[in-house]
Image (cartoon, rainbow, N blue to C red):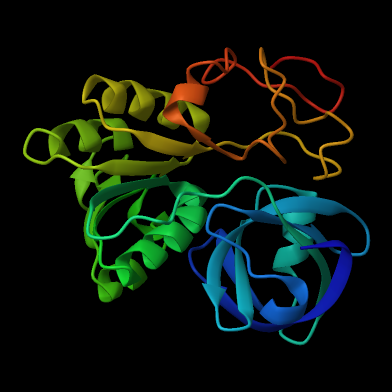
Length: 266
């Protein structure tokens, strides 16, 4: 882990969907530390800095997958191969990647498939049977499913508009899947309203799980308190972003509200 930005050169850019790009860059694991699935890095474009989930952990290479949703991400999307960014980290509580020979369910909604890709890829290589619910609004926005399928995952495609795979939400797809299957553990990342629905379903099925949360974040060091959640005061950048289901139960704002930069609920 490094706490000051390391200037890295973008080595590859992949147009994943019409709104999502993946940026790869070299990362010396011996000198800079080896991240774990579920952790994040702070990305600096020399104007501003934002947290980004790690989507791929390769040999001396990392990748972030970025959806174009605002000024900062739009500036990242304008970058070319050979351009540079600043990266520090990795930070946060990671997914539990110690499982071997288990039946695993990984559920990702939209760009939430980025950290799901990291943990699912790792667990497949460790001999686990991994089913993935890959959910998006429409077919063109499905992310990482083909790559995971090539590794050996069983993919359950899900689109809101029914343009590919199951027609409906990730919650509906998961409920139907659990009619015929059971799992030792699950991993979930996506819009929080989706994760709240998945949480209720997995709790009813007595399937333990980890959930990756997102909040407004500034320092990533646990100092500023911007990313604290009610009512425990846990910091998303330190105690999170990944939480076990028993801790999710204690986060009273989960699936209900969050706070903006000034601390106002929305």
